[in-house]
Length: 232
Image (cartoon, rainbow, N blue to C red; front, side, top):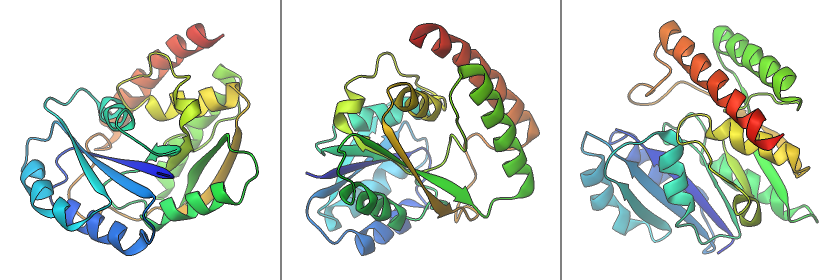
């Protein structure tokens, strides 16, 4: 298996049919697997996924009974991944499934196997761009590594990099952890443009307004302190 891509799903029953259909259109080779992680959903995500998955030979299912965080769902999927390259993207279709194939094309064009390929979001609202830029600047100055658009998708890297992870976070800080660790280990980082439209169905499980952003900032700052202490 060349690539395993994790799709963490929390109450994404309306998006799953379109996600699988879109991936079905772009996956044209047999060495790519899609791992759909039902991350403790409380809607009918499990039923919808069970009904649709048999139609897609490239797709697998991982069930997390109780939601323990965004990062926990991804980690649960990564532990089941069989690919030489592994990673994740979102189920809300704000990142086009074809971006995963673009990332794999980049990987296969490189001579260096230890590579980290990550999207860089375009077309976002001004306030979201401003928020991201501010957080990126803080993290870069605080952690001593140039970091920007930390939560962009997809994230794809060699499985040997994953083997070096120690106590990764179970929340939204997983994106920061992975990117920062890759920079610390001097792994080659390649960014590429991805268009970031509005969600097709449902609402974000965390980005619900200014209060949610304040909470996100607080959690990220707390994790950044722990991360800096553990890796320096």
